[in-house]
Image (cartoon, rainbow, N blue to C red; front, side, top):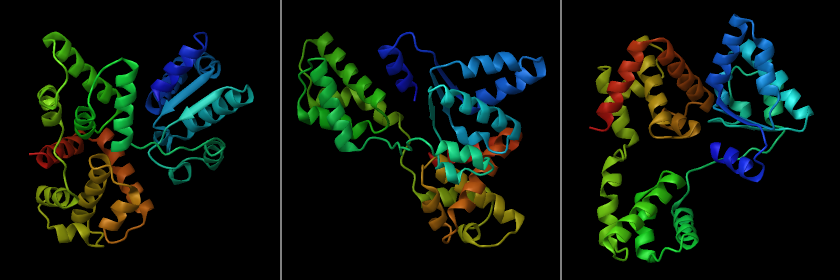
Length: 286
């Protein structure tokens, strides 16, 4: 999202661009109220050319903050300014968000941003290599595209590291060289974890069986581990809500969303739960 802001500023250096997370927006609003500086807060957020807010779903349940953002949105929209919001779900799937906000979120274009697939990564590398006049074989670019699967910045960084290495050693990039340069990158990445292993680790941690985890039972000793497992499948494995629901006996995606939101909220309130989650995550990748 910040890359969009940088592009806007490149095109129009005079543009007022503001990027914040929804958490920062909320915290600044609460602070403005406590300090009697609401007018200054409104001045800051309602006088920009482009407002970008990350993780807008975290405004859920914050009624007063939603009220303020509603008026901020209206002011910017009426003044033909731009607004970009990001969320981990569709507007209609965000719980505890006012309907009038959901309606406004759906006014504009909704785009599903996924990590680039292999073909896209390879095309990006070819484009970057041509742009910088690097002479790199398809074999080498293919290895980089297969190794770096996260984002474009890391792809370009890997290509640049390889070329710097070759320039310093006065050689042309080979497959052996790129493997050597990227060996640390591959080993630093977390091992791929299966859903099966995640469920086993969570079950072991809470001293229950994986069968208990999948039961429909509402017993307290099963509900919490189940919600934690759903949370980790979303946060660590990046599974979709419907997919997670399928793994838990066909539960509705809204049930999964509720579980993920609940654990996320409790982690911010209870240090003990955050420590539990950290321990489980460490066990996942051991």
